[in-house]
Structures are given as C-alpha cells and as structure tokens.
Image (cartoon, rainbow, N blue to C red; front, side, top):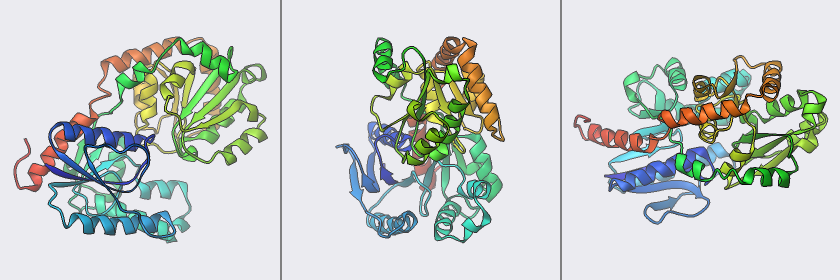
Length: 379
C-alpha cells in the first residue's frame, strides 16, 4: 500500500508525534510505503520514509494551516495514494487519528462566545467539521470513548465511522530507562533529597494544569511544603507560571527544565506525577508513570484517568475541578505513607492491561480502510 501521512509539524518529544512515528514504522514493517507531508520537521529524519516539507504561508498559525492544506492537497493529486491519513484535523482525509479534544466544545466551555468571531475559530472549527460532520466520509481512529461521545453529540457523527485504538505506550523504553540506582544521585543533584519530588511532563503548560499544580504545592503545610519540589518537563513558556509561583511563595521550589530526552529517569526519581489538565483526550503520561511505578494525581476528565482508578495507582480530582479538592488530595497522598504501594499497584496493572498495541491496531485499521475505499469488504 502507498500511504500519505499528513502532520502539521513534527516535534520529536510530543506525544502525538511519537505515536505518529510508531504507527508509520509499523506500516513500514508490514511492507507499506509511507510519504509524510508536513510544514516542519525537527530532529533526525527516518531514512525509510519520504518526507516532503511544505511550509505554510501566513502570519498566524491558522492561516499557515490553511495554506498547508492547499499545498498538500495539490501535491497528493499528482500521486497515487491508497489512503490519506491525517494526524491533525483538516479537510480531505480518508482517516483521521483523533488525538485532540473536540475544539468546538472546548471553546464553548473555556472561552466567551466572542471567540467564535475570530478568524482562528472559523478556520479550526471548519477543519473539525470537515472531519466529523454527517456529510463527511472521513473515518476516525479514536483514543477515548468520552471524547468520541463528545464529537457525536456536537456533530452527530455516525458511530460506524469511529475505530478504537488502544494505548501505545513504549513499555520497553520506559522500563529500560528506570535505573533505580540513579534515584538518590539525581535527587541529591537536584537538591531535594530527603524530601518529596513532584513531576509534570507535557507541553502546553496552561492546558496541562501547571497553575493548578503550583497552587497545590503552595497550599501544603509549611514543614511539608519546604521539603517538596515541583519539576516540569516539556515545551512551553514558563514566565507566567514562575511569576505565580513567586506570588505564592514557592518560586524556589518550581523548576521548569524544558524538553528532556531522559524522562524515564525522572519517573524513577519522583514521588508523584501531577497531571491536573483542563482538557485531555487521553494523557499518555499517566500510563507512562504507571508503567514506571510512579503514583498519579490527575483530573478525572483525562481520557486515561480511569486507569488510575482501576489500578488504585493514585487519585483523581473529580469534575468540575475545585482547587481546594486537589490541594487536599495532594496533601493526603504525601502524608499517607501509601506512595510505594500505589506505585506498585500501577506497575502491576501495566503488566496485565493492554496499554501497548496501538501501532499494530492502527495498521490493521489502515489496511481495512484501504479495502473499504477500493470497494472491498474489510476483513
């Protein structure tokens, strides 16, 4: 099969991009060819797939996005692809990997109605409608039943166009990176041993809830707060959050490290993963922490939050979010003496549940969609 993969931008440390790459490699392993169209590519380029850069034109992200769509649609019209697979919402896709929350619903809940008058909203809502409307022929690989139902409520998308993908955590990579001998050394290097180390991993600090984590840290009793530090790994602008930390008296205990390639090392050294996201389709980092044996405190609106509950691997902050509740739960986890047990529960659950087969299932769905497009009956 000759496949076109469409991706706005490739950034090697993003969760979406990691899944895109693993699915692409799984397709290549089955003997299929993959041609990637993207606006930009950071990091090493795989040698076994063709990558075409099409820098979008415009001064804003949405104008560049519209330009990119026009460019790749012209490019693929000159090729003979069996299937067009998109990893961002846009028109013209045969199959969409739905990693994002429903944009229209999210904007309605988090922004004023005036947002609907902006060019950005018009472009992104149009792209989403092109994928999910009743008239669209695009099929969707979905990651979370809750988010699938959100799309159906907003667009009345027929259920038969949705195809479930299980998680795709790289268990081997995480477990290999868990060198427990490093725990004491790294914590001493960071200046937090003895004490508690809280960890956040993920880009888009606002949506991931960094402000909520800082407030929870600041709410701890004095003696506990003084020996607790929050480390943040990911891509984002930290200035606003560091100002908040300073205002709450915890500036010296909040450390934004930027992008790191050794995240499993931090999983091994931390005491709790915090993921109090405002909106989160899935939350791969939640499962990565469980694989690593790290307890989790997350918001229940995260698509993968239910795994924490099933495994008894930490706590979930119920919806609607209340900061006071998260504050109490963080204190309870730190004071309970159960962190080791919760971490072990998560690791045991990760050994029993299917948190890993996403690339293989995605290839099967892609192959079935090619058969369907050609007028055959998917096997």
